[in-house]
Every structure is written in C-alpha cells, then in structure tokens.
Length: 284
Length: 168
Image 1 (cartoon, rainbow over the protein chains, first blue to last red):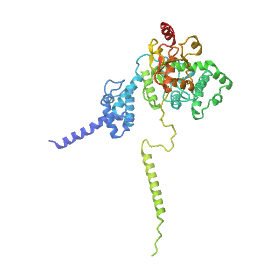
Image 2: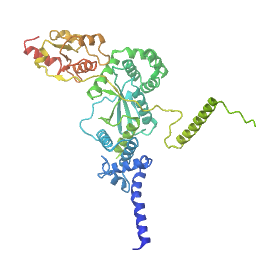
Image 3: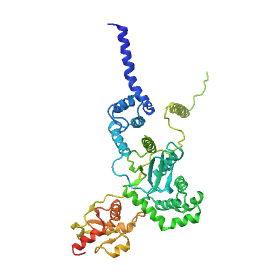
Image 4: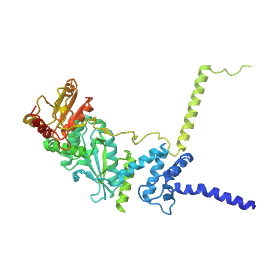
C-alpha cells in the first residue's frame, strides 16, 4: 500500500467533505456567522427542507448550485437567523410554511381601498403593502415608521408603496381620537408628516395636543378642527375599520402584501425581508 | 523590627472587593467588545419586544334565526342596531345596546347584561358584513360574559322567524 498516496487521499477527503458544506454556508453571511454547533444544525435543516420558490431541490442542493437563486439565499439566511435564535427544525419548518403562505397567491385578494392620501413611496412601485394600524398601538409606531423609512429612502424605495389604513382599537384610550386626527390630516393633504409626528410623540399623546401637532406640520388649526368634528371624518374611520374586519383584521399592526395577509413573523426585520422578496419576485 | 501596620480587615475586604469588581468589569467589557454581536453600552434603537395589539374581543358562535332556544324565557335578546331601527321593530323584551365600531359599549350596560341572570345572551344586528350583531356579541364575550351568541343574518331573518312563530 502506498502510504503517501493514501495519506494524500485521506487529506483530500478530509478537506473536501467539510469544505463542501462550508461553500454552502459561506454563500449566506448569516449562516457563516453561526457557531460550529449551530452550523451543524443549519446543515441538517438544509438537507431536508425545500425552498418554496426558486429551486425544487433541498436547500443543501439548491445552495450548492453554481449560482443559487436570490430567493434561496434569502430563505437560507432567514433559516440561519432562526437557528441562531435557537429555533429547532420543526419550528423552522412551520415558519417556512407561514412565509410561503404569505408569499404565494392562494385564494381571493383582500378588498382594500387604496387612497393616495394615505400612500407613501413611489406610485409605480410594483409591490403594494397595506398596514392597518392604531394611533395608540406601541408596536404600530415602530412598524409603520420603519416601513415608511424603508419605502421612502431605504432599501425598499421604488420597489414598494405603502398605504396606511386606520384601525382604531376600542381597548386603547385615545385610539378613536388619534384615528380621527389621522383622517383629518389626510383630508387636508398632510397625512404622513402628521402621523409620524403623532407616533414620535407617542408618550406625550393627549387628544388636546392633536390640533397643536397639526399646526406643527403646517396645517391650519381651524381647518383641522373642522375636519376633526366633521361626521364624514368619523364615517371614513368607521369604514376603514369595517373594511379591516371584513379582511379578518383583529389586531394591529396587520399587514397585507399585494392583497395577501402577512402571516409570517411580525418583526420589522422579517417584514422588510419578505417585502424585499416580494419586490424581487415582482421584478422577475 | 516595626513593620507596616496591616490595614483594617474590613478595609482590606472592601479593597479586594473593589479590585475584583474592577477586574470583572474590565474583562467583561473586553469580552463584550470582542464579540461580533456585543451588547451596546447605549441602546440607540428600541428593543423589539413588541407584540400586536388585539381588538380585545372574545368568541361568540352564530345561531340560526329559527333556533327555538332564541325564544326560551332565559334567553336575553340584545339589539345591536341603531335606535331608529330598534324602534321600527324588535322582539318583545329585547334589550337595546347599539353597537359602535369606535367606542366600547358602556360599562354599566355590560354589567347589567352580565347580572341579568340570563342563561344565554343572543345579539342581533344589521346582518351586514361585518355584522354589528356579531361584533357586539364578540365584544360582550371579550368583556367576560358567557354563553354569548349572535343571530346569523341579523334582524331581518329574525323578524321573519318571529312572524312565522306568531310574533313575540
């Protein structure tokens, strides 16, 4: 037996075996940043789960392709993020199914009024995201502001347009007043600056301050107060809530992407990632 | 030979504790600085520990307008429609509690229903989509009232069912 040749062969096998999986993981920075133990978990998951788009094989095989599809890399990164956070295979599989449910067209689209007074982002953007939100929901102020930044001059600029739909929650004191103020500002053409100011001053919120804040964003106080007291403003707010209930909105924020309900993880990062995926899918 | 006086035991312990504390802080900060995802000394963005805010409504099953239990003595019927429609027609003994999409039902009214002694509470509304009867039933269930139902289809089929029974 040729000893040096055997050693060379063993060395080659030793180098290639983990090397192949290193290549797979190196393509996704989130995966490469995992600890060795977590990398093993990620590899195990990649060897059994399939991406719902971009490739018909397992993640492992799809990632080993010469140039993996962007959606495959995105989903792989997402899996590695979940592995890092301690997610197990079953949980990650369930999450992948929820993400697929969010992305893939199934059933009729939600019927939503898209009023340009509540829009932000390019009117010609290929993806439409709608957020039902309450003026007094702490999560809404974070989510809506983050999405606003992303679609105006962030990573989703030109790719996604966002519409806000007021959904006043009865359980939140001041929600109705905040909702009426939002509609009033929209009727006067300063919806987004007003909404951002109200959310920015979330901890100082008081219905008495609403007309004052209208002045801060350049609205005429009298006109604002007139709109606020107008029964039509209340009707618009009620109509938006009825629309939300028809679309099975029971909590805020509730998100719809191109008419499909968003049922994946409700974190800013996850929503932005899914919207990137939607914009890439729209561009294909 | 006269040596240096030993520090007071309590002071020595305090000094050693301080040294351990400082040493730990330095080591901890160094490790944190070397970690790729170290904890920032000053958190500049809000932590994402937020959860969606629910509407706060409970579960209320639907009931067919011709269900005989609607007319049992221990059933409390609640009319969720506006006053004008309530005045036009309502089953005998039905309590009026108009539903509002933006404001919660008055607490006193909810408490009155809760303490009515009814075996079941059946709400009927406009039968629209969404149905005010269903929405109010869910709100009452969310407020802790048990055995709350809503009439499927709202007041119109209920009136027809009542007429078929000879009125109530």
